[in-house]
Length: 236
Ligand code: FES
Image: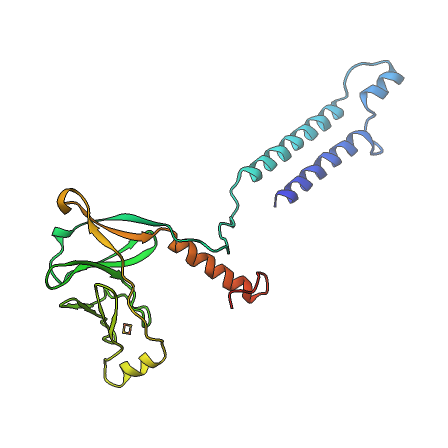
């Protein structure tokens, strides 16, 4: 777009110059007429051409400056490089005292979908919010029974302390187990959590990888480019 504007402006300048100096029928330049007629008065047509050329030049410069300062529509902010984890304690804005036993609270912390909650005995925990079966948010109706969390969709259950799988896709009968066959069994993600402030009076804090989103995106781009033969092919 910028190059088109520059070309258009240059064309206008060229036309004006040609009209002023070259085209037959156009008045001779003042410098030449002064030599033949002895007059130093500037030609009106030359002045008009000069003004037009100057205006066009200013227009080109302004358009060029405008296009240079405008941000690009598709800024390339992605990478395909391996992004290393960067762990940090992130405040949740939730105090542990606000959570009742078996209550769950879904949050996104630095791109990580987590679920903080309390066991029936009142112990604080934090697990990944997405079920490792097919990614259903546990926050959409999961039950906490003792220190076990049960997925609302197919009843997979996990220990909240370490994410250990207990049962895999047990409901509804027949359909649940069938859906379980198509996905490899996995444990639930767990996150370290703590209560900040004096004697745990502050917000719940969770230890998360603040580079998780960047790493996911880098992997996505790598897969995409590898599929097109444009990266090093190590994704597949
Ligand atoms: S989505 Fe959780 S068990 Fe199927």
